[in-house]
Image (cartoon, rainbow, N blue to C red; front, side):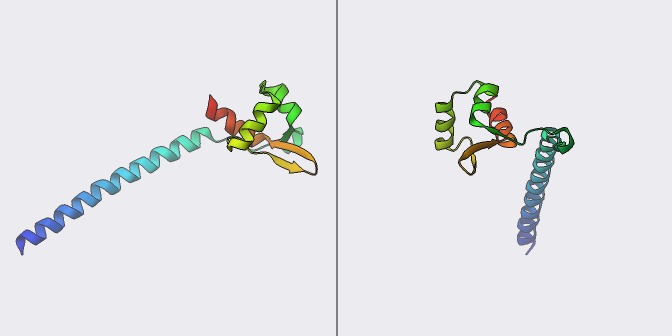
Length: 100
């Protein structure tokens, strides 16, 4: 009986140590996410929320054919507005942060 109690106590201690590690990891992840938060867009300043492909090539220097390759590989997402292909500003920023 005493041996069973010691085994359960050891399991509880192990579980507690693992839980504390997980809590510490979650706290670190939350701190990183908090540091990388982008400010909310200021709609009053009339900033663009999306770019046409020609604008993206001009801004980034990435060629049009490379953009289509990134779309097909799933590394960059495009949205359609009628016949126009747009890349959301947040999507472009996400991709650029990943490659830096």
